Image 1 (cartoon, rainbow, N blue to C red):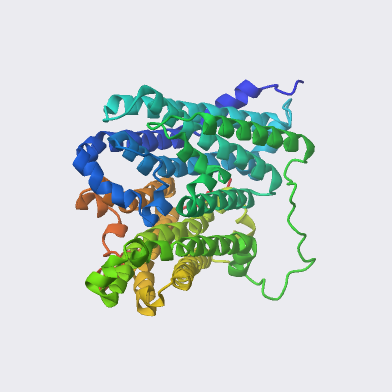
Image 2: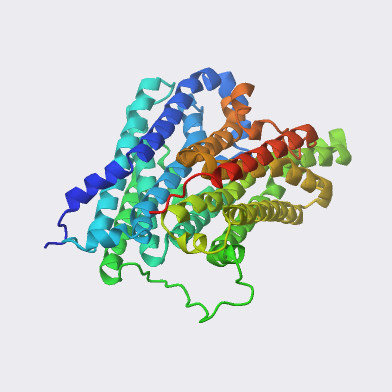
Length: 540
């Protein structure tokens, strides 16, 4: 047996296993990139239209969200496109790679499939190598399709060199973080920890990128995510970041392979601390058992999103200080009106961030609800089902924990944003009030509940539709996050609940929408519960 015995077979099996997931990602990513490129000529095809958007692109709020605008001189449509889309598409590409890498390695190991494979003439490196090949091929294909799509879009100001640099750059940044996830999959002793660790590192890279872009873009080189900005594909194309991504990815890939040889199957380098010999008094049922299993991950999400909110809050003073950028406004309009304008800018910025923070808060809750079906199919719940534990109690244990966790995560992130932002302001009167905090909180809360309720409905009534939920959540986020810059029609923005509620706290909470979403969430939960208590269990 050699180190690569059956590598080709396992690679083919990996592509067959993930073909549906990969096809969906390919269609979404390439379709989004190409569709936006086609639309950009209509949005920013003339010098006047470009000049109108330049002030927005250079504002600290947009820089924090999309990256610093690097070009000088007369900008082109293609340069505006690259500024708006590179960081966003990199984030989407990274999310795909993190999920794929962990699922194909640690996820398969947790389910016992890797142990069955390794029982044959298969070396310890082969599953990791097969995943590495899969990541390489998938990212390369998507990157090539990006470039071809941009060439076909015929956007003003594009060049073949710039198009291919974007395609290869996005492929490389996705592959880089995919190899990072391969390392965390070897370090952690189960998939949830591997995923959480990978996202924490990704989040740190995002925070460094955001803070350095706002304060001093020259420091953005310290963030791997920031390397994608430094490509400047249509303004002095720079291939150095591409080389850095590939070099770092090679180092991480070799590290993952080296660790895979040295660790035992089913274990991790960072082993979980041994538990008590006997259960504590609070570990008396499924609810407490669920909390015991997931509390580290949930606490990690709480800490991570609190840091994210605080990081966004640190740019409040830069966004809202109109006096610093134009002191004559105070003489013309008076201090009171200028401070009111500063306050309005901060409220508008917070309204956009509530969508970001609520989307992030939905992710761990939805993962927790959907894990009920995963735990069911892997056999982890068989011991509970064999005891006097009803399906209803088990379902509501998962759902209740998810609702509490996502609500807390969102509330803490919003509070962290506003408290840190207000503390950073030179003029404290410009800051957001407690009333505006509660408007932002209650405005997004029913949307969070609605998505978690859809998760309960999927687990109970339509398990095969679980993947569609993530697509629906992504549609809601993209339509609001990019809706203004892409001038999306209102009917597109209203396809998801994110478009039903007015932008809070910029506008007041629409309590009719609040009630409608709450009722829809309740109905979805009841239907999911009714179906779950009557369908056959999928014990494998």
